[in-house]
Amino acid sequence: MKKIITILALILTIGTNAQQTGEDKFGAWYMYFGTNKISDKLSIHTEAQFRYYETTGNFNQLLLRTGLNYHINENAIATFGYGYIDTDPTFEETAALQDDFTFLGNEILEHRIFEQLILKNKLWEFLIEHRYRLEQRFIDNKSFRNNEKDTQHRARYRLQATLPLTDTFFLNFYDEIFINLQDNAFGQNRLYAALGIHITENSSVQLGYLKNHFNSGNFDRIQIGVFFNPDLRKKKE
Image 1 (cartoon, rainbow, N blue to C red):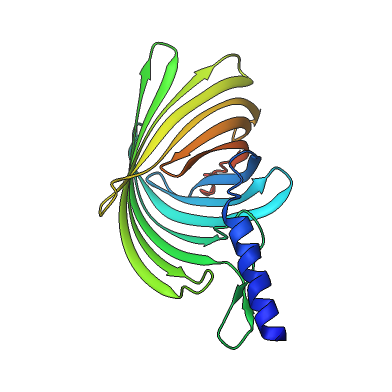
Image 2 (image 1 turned 120 degrees about the vertical axis):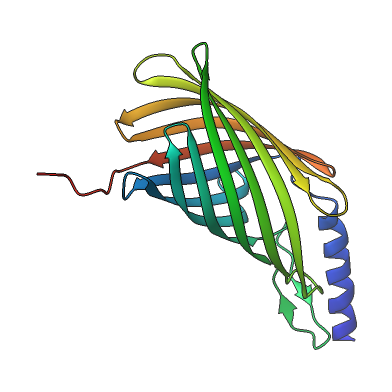
C-alpha cells in the first residue's frame, strides 16, 4: 500500500509540474568568454555559462566550451571545438521513480563537437559579425524513465551588430537561428540586445536581454556576460 501511495503521489506531482515550463518567469544566464592569443595565427577559446530558469536559482543548464581558433586574417576566424552540456529539462524539481522504487534526477548530458567560421566587416558605424557553426551532438538522456542515447546534427547562423557609443560604452545586438539537420528543421531563435562596457583594453562586460523562441514556447532571459581576452604570446625583448 505504501508503494502504491508513493507512485500515485509521484504521478500527481509530475502531472502538476508538466504544466509549469517557466515561460512566465525571467531566467538568467551568467556567462564568461575568453579568447587567448597564443601565436599570430592561433588563439584558444574558453567559455562557461550557468543558466537558470529564474534569476537567482532553479538550475537549467551548465555549458562549458573550448576551441582552437585559426585567424585567417583580421576579419576571418575558423574554429574547431568541443562543448560539455549538463541540462535539467524541467522547470520544477521532480524526481523520477524506477521499477525498484528508487528515485532518479532529471538530467540530459551532451558532448558536442563544433566547426565554426566568423566573418567580420563594418557597415557605417556598426561592426558586423557573421557566425556560421555546425554541431555534432552526442546526447545521453537520463531524465525520468528515459535512458536513451542519440546523435543529432545542427547548423547555426548568428548575425551580430556592435555600435560603439564612446570609448567605454557600446551597444550589442544579434539574432541567431538554429536549424536541425534531421526532422523538425526549426530548432530555436535567439534575439539579443545589450549594453556593454569596456573595463580594460582586453576585457568588457555586457548586460543584456535575450528572447529565446522555441516551437514549444518563448522564454525571457537576463544575460550578464564577462569577456576577457588576454594576449598569451611571449613579449619580444
